[in-house]
Image 1 (cartoon, rainbow, N blue to C red):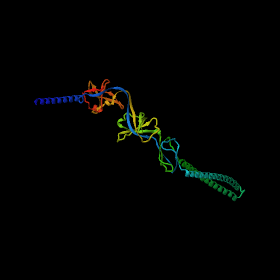
Image 2 (cartoon, helix red, strand yellow):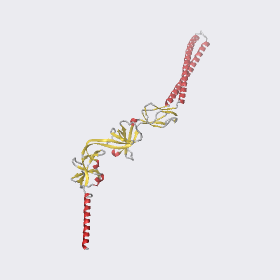
Image 3 (tube, one colour):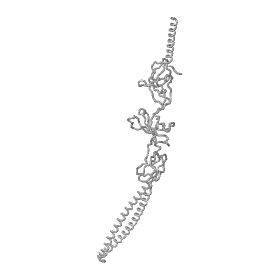
Image 4 (cartoon, helix red, strand yellow):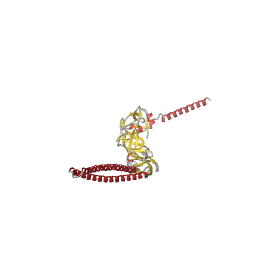
Length: 389
């Protein structure tokens, strides 16, 4: 009985020892095994630093087209999306009453012109009569002074001269009055023609109709918008760029624009201008990025994203951005010395989406550990690593 019991105890101890050895081996191969990393070295690359911004498609020049007079909309000749030229007729108001007013104004002007002609003739006749009366008065005054005619007869010619002068004055006043009436009639006719012209709604400049607000038959009041026109050459993206990314952004820099309606398409652009006041809440600045060339098909208000090439450098010594970590607010990398890690602070320069320039802190021949971000953060100085092949 004693021997079998001892055997069972020995067997139990052996199994326990085997389990401990197995566990130790597993821990050695997993938990306590050197971390596997990839390695990279500094290399020269051409880098383009891109600044991101998002916003909406807008137009610098947007014109609201309305009527200057009140009337009924008779015809609408263009629709949304139509390209128009400066001076093109876009719509017409009912001009029946305006045409009647124009005809009446023309008739009044013609009548006043005829009156002026008549009064001019009357004045000429009165002036001729006055000249004759003056001549007769002088002659009979001379004869009366020589007592060749009676004083009474001479006074008759003097009275005739007074009446002739009064008639000339009356004719002159009548002509002046007729002239004023003709001037007023001419102005009224010009005004009626102008109102008739205003019944035609014209395009103030070249552009595209982006909105049509009224249909034929609608009553139009002065100033009520009928169309909204935008100049396609002034269409741009009003993008909001974080203040921390603004360094180096300047007008004239190339950019790439992506529209929400065409996510797979890239449109070339250029920084047109920067605002001078930041948004105090979002801490961003508005940057206007123009399409180059101008965008033919656009939708104002559409969401858009821009990438501005704010800086570039050829042959910049760089490493993958994934190799960088931040410890105590200082950027650095894990340099492999032998088979152990050593944290090295570095000074960075220009960077793009994948690589970052190293201006100091890392030599060309040194190798840098590359691993998952969470793994890089957990590494410690002196930790053993194994290079993954």
